[in-house]
Image (cartoon, rainbow, N blue to C red):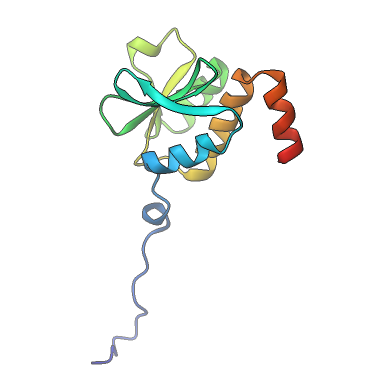
Length: 131
């Protein structure tokens, strides 16, 4: 049967096709020099040395991400559907990121910024050479 409706086949929405999953986070985080995967509070976590870069929250749908407090404040206002905190994180340089709504590109940038804040100088030098 041919389609004669005059409409082109529907395409997947850009949001759905670029959905971020734990596998996406893993790919982005492990691409950064010196990042290793382990566990934190029983969930997958990514560290630079012994310093926590990011981890999957216990709810399985949210990422706990290291972030500068001023950047966090801006993101919370700019996109509260994606970025938020709970009382637990109020005084710590972390925020929560909803994987269902975050886009790959901004997350990649946030992971790299967090990595740069944690990585020793020797790793920072390798990123400059390789990137």
